[in-house]
View 1 (cartoon, one colour):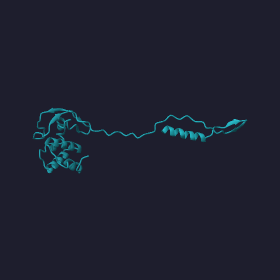
View 2 (tube, rainbow, N blue to C red):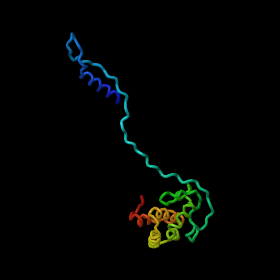
View 3 (cartoon, rainbow, N blue to C red):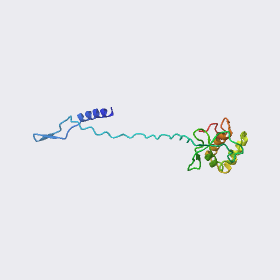
View 4 (cartoon, helix red, strand yellow):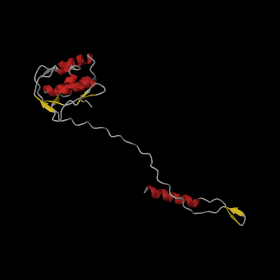
Length: 179
């Protein structure tokens, strides 16, 4: 369709133009022509390039492991445990937190344990005050927002917490929901 419009436009323009002067009996006079110039090869027009937003990678299946107390916790986990290789990101986070079946990745827990020990040790039924204190203490140890949020996700699975709204979002981002 685009080429047809260009071809018609070129025909119209060519019919309106004149050729260089020609000599007729020694006098030169311009002679109108209706010559058609060849259609130039289509050149690609610039288009906006939209990079797709990467979707989260699916968690690896991991290897199930026997339930045990993971330090700094002092009680057995409610959730299943697994082991999968973790990637330590450039900003010091660990992923994946969970294996494909939703069980806690022990390697991720162990990566976060020295960074967020207070939150990971908060116990089975902490009050919001206990969690706020744990967040404060971990931040005083220089834990980042993302480290605390990941630690909260691990601890919530480990202990079976079901707070609503998410206290990590409330404490860290002052929002009821983390985005």
